Image 1 (tube, rainbow, N blue to C red):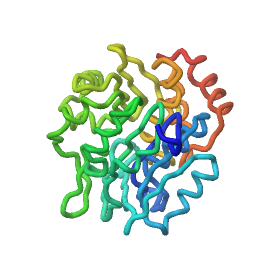
Image 2 (cartoon, helix red, strand yellow):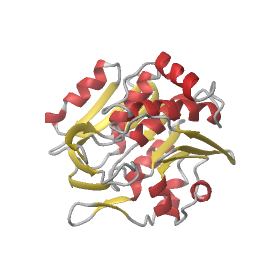
Image 3 (cartoon, rainbow, N blue to C red):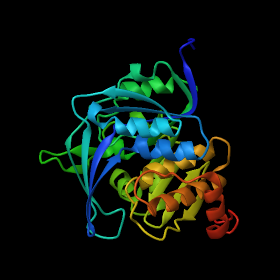
Image 4 (tube, helix red, strand yellow):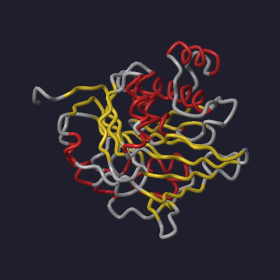
Length: 302
């Protein structure tokens, strides 16, 4: 480790996304990206956080906002930011139509040479954003390697629609991953299994020691051969975009020091609160603790 190396609890990375959100209540424009939602959640839970991203300079405001709350940001400026259109045809947050007309390109190993962390969270949006040489390089570090499945099974079609596609290299990638996050739709696409528990077992069999699966009602975790579950208790869905990113970042924020049965409750609580307000999670630890006390029977819902 050189004198230039920076050490963190967690490094979260993925392309910034300029999001257009279309719902029955209208169209809105947001600063998105898993790195953005995730870094906010981890920082608000008290971690020392770095965010690595790729974006056009015109969108620098997202970097500024993260720096304002104490996140170290390492941006690479590209000709275009990634553009994402997210259309929700109904109230089911798992049911959405995605389009991506532009991308900020792929990460490279050199973006991580001077960074060390207890965990690296790979939070891409589209296959190719995080190439295998990046995963392979990060595996050489003494860190937990966490991945969001969406960034590996989603591809862009000729009309810019994002679809789930077969992932021929899944065994090669997943053999290097410690914790895999997926949602119910992605898990079924990868495994062909509708049953959440069976899908999680299949994914775990490919390499990850833990699987974190979100669905419309809550979170399922498979860790050390044991299942844990926690429900969401959100009162609205206005902030549904960024749900999964917030979930895995808050889960790992607690998982670094707590067992799965504790981490899942914190994650479910933070994600519930996030879904009630558009944009990244910006509430404090006492608020989360009060919500857990109110909704999760003193943390015993598992």
